[in-house]
Length: 116
Image 1 (tube, rainbow, N blue to C red):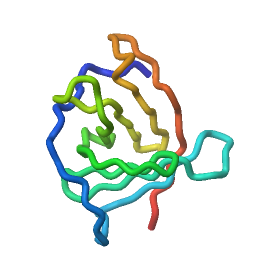
Image 2 (spheres, rainbow, N blue to C red):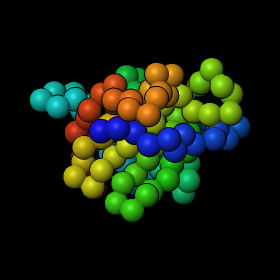
Image 3 (cartoon, helix red, strand yellow):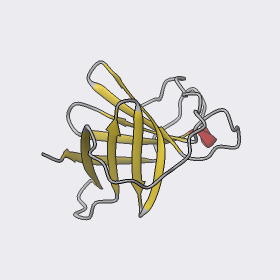
Image 4 (cartoon, rainbow, N blue to C red):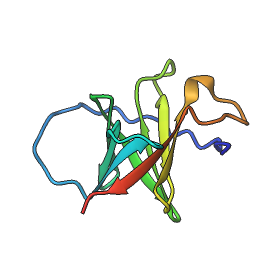
């Protein structure tokens, strides 16, 4: 999967741990793995990602049937470092924009299941 050049400009947000309900949430694992390594959630246009026990607050958006989370610190303070693209079939791709170019390949492919 080649990523498009739709890096999302970063919003300045203050991360604050609160207890609230997400609009939707997915648990993701590496293919053929059993352990959840990434949790994706959103509320409105706020994206929440937990990756290997590290929590990120970022931005969420949907594009047709795909869902996209942008998150993580970047060398450029105006942009996020990572994106996770989740397709309707539950396959997700992690892209690291530090290594971004026109034909970037995803760093990781995940299988995600939506929590009911």
